[in-house]
Amino acid sequence: MTLPRNELTRSGLPISQLGLGCASLAGIFQPVADADARGTIDGALEAGISYFDTAPFYGHGLSERLTGDGLRGQDDIVLSTKVGRILRPGQTDDPGAWVTALPFTPEFNYTYDGVMRSFETSLQRLGLDRIDILYIHDIGSMTHGEELGPVLFETAMTGGYAALDRLRRSGVIAAFGLGVNEVAVCEDALDHGDWDVFLLAGRYTLLEQEPLHGLMQRCLTHKTDVVIGGPFNSGVLVGGDSFDYGAVPPHIAAKVEAMAVVCAAHDVPLPAAALQFPLAHPAVKSVIPGPRTPDELAQNIDWFLHPVPPALWDDLKSEGLIDADAPTQP
Image 1 (cartoon, rainbow, N blue to C red):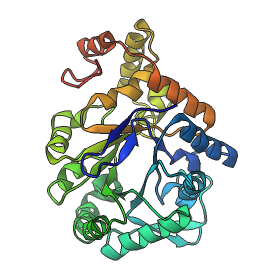
Image 2 (image 1 turned 90 degrees about the vertical axis):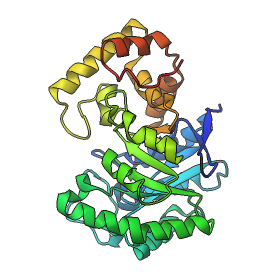
Image 3 (image 1 turned 180 degrees about the vertical axis):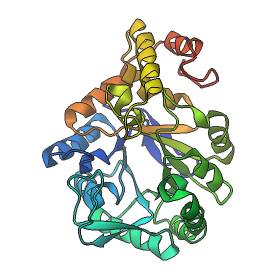
C-alpha cells in the first residue's frame, strides 16, 4: 500500500499525509508491550506511512529507543524528534503519565549547547545517523507559566534557534520548527526566524479551529507548514473519556455527540471525519495520531481511507459545529 504524500514547502521532504505519532508507544497512562510497539511501527511501514515523530520526553527516552529499533535500515522515511529537554541519568520522583519510563529525569534546556547535546544524544538513543526534522518541544506559557515562559522562549529564540539554524545549514538536519500545543507561541515564533514546520497538537481539529483566521494564514504567508498532532483531542473523538488529557467538559461532550449524529447520517465514522478534516487546509501536510497497537493502527488507516461525502462537511457547517470558513475536502 502507498499512502498519499505531501512535500514540505521549504525542505522538499516527502511526508505521508498520515503519519505515526510514537508518544503512545512509550506507555502513556498504561504500558504498551514491546511486541505491540514494534508491530505498530512495522505495520505503519507496510501500510506506506513514511513519517514518524518521537521525542526524548516520551517515556524519558523509551519512545526514541523503540522508534529507532523499528526504523533502523529503512531509507524511505522521514523522522522527527525534539529538543528542549536533556535526559539526566537517574529515575525521576514523578514520571508523570509515563508508566514505563526509563530511569532518566528530563530537564528543560533551550540553550545553544542544550540543543546540540539533545540532538547528539537523540541520535545515540535512536541508533540512527540522521534526524530529518527537529522541533523545539513544549516552549510556551502553558508549559512553563506566565513568569518563566517568556524567559525560556527568549532563550529558545536566540541560542536554541541559532543551534537549529547551524544544523540545518550544515545539512545535518533538513528542517526545524516547534512541537507545541499552543497557538500563541507559534505566532510569536514567526516573528523570530524562518521556520520550516510547526507540529501543533490538538488545536486545529474537528473540535477546535482557533488558528484558522490567524496562525494558519500566517503559516501560508511564511511558507511554514503544519503537522497536526492529537487529531482526536486525546481520545474524545474516538469514544474516549479524555479531552486534552483531562476530563471531558460537558460542552465538549455535547458537541461530540452532535457531530456523531451528523456523521452517522452520512454513514461516516466520527473518527474518520476527525482524521481527515485537518488535511483539507493547504498549510497542513500531515496528521499524526498515536495508535498503541497494530489493531489501532489498522483502524486509523481504515478511517483515513474512508470516503467522506462533501455533504457531511456542509452539514457540520450548517449546524455550527465547525467553522464556516474551514477548508473541507471536495
